[in-house]
Amino acid sequence: MAFIDYYKILEVDKKATEADIKKAYRKLARKYHPDLNPNDKEAERKFKEINEANEVLSHAENRKKYDEYGENWQHAEEFEKSKQQRQYHRGGQQDGFGGFGGGGGGDFSDFFESMFGGRSSGGGGRRNAQFKGQDFNAELHLDLKDVYTTHKRTLTINGKNIRITIPAGVENGQQIKISGLGGEGSGGGPKGDLYITFTVENHTNFKLDKHNLYYTVDLDLYTAVLGGDITADTFDGKVKLSVKPGTQNGTKVKLKGKGFPIYKKEGESGDLYITYQVQIPTNLTEKEKELFTELAKLRMS
Image (tube, helix red, strand yellow):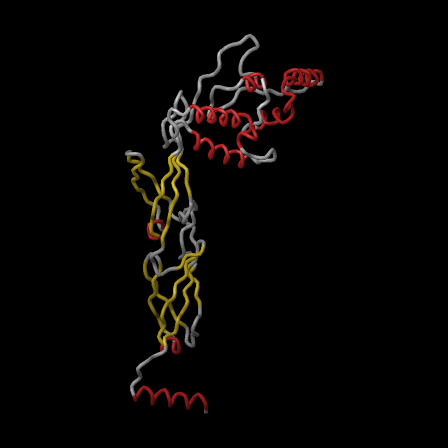
């Protein structure tokens, strides 16, 4: 009975974090899943190895035991009993390395069962293989206007209609997980999950940067010079703005809370920044030229 290198099976380093292990497991499990490799004995064997490695490395106590004894696994039970006896005499709590929760299951190797108590010394049957169902992946294309408010949408996944709620503020490239909406598990295993990736396209005149919106408003020269009221667009309607006399080209004004909704923070939004772009009049009449000339003389006197 040979030692099994679970780190090598999951293709991770011994210093891998919990997140690293989870990512590696998901990638390999998807690659060798029986649903994607029907009647492939080698893929089935690899899938069982991957699940076994995940059973150990994704559970802190079991990973600790595995790391502590490593290739000395034959003596693990002896070391554990000795350690528990020392703790008992000190009046401390015993460390247990009990069974595992979900996460894949499978027909475990002799090495696994010997080290982690998968079966008694007198023999006994192995656990039935339990495979989690295949994860489904979907891409949903939306317009920026679609994610300004929370709304429901019906998706068709593998011929089945699924109604989901899309929260306001979902970002381009963001992925969400809906548990249990993947493929059916086998051997009593859990269903897979549904992962939806959002592609959000902006066909508006507003520029979005994080949660803030930016918009340019044309301002005629006379209003810029004399001041006055104008009507400007926001993402969800129009607003009246008061322009100060002498407003310069490029002046920015901030409309607090008129930006884009913040994901999963109901009632919170970014800000809207409006930039004034002063329009210089063209095709002047002779009379207008005379008036501008007179104005220029007054300014220079």
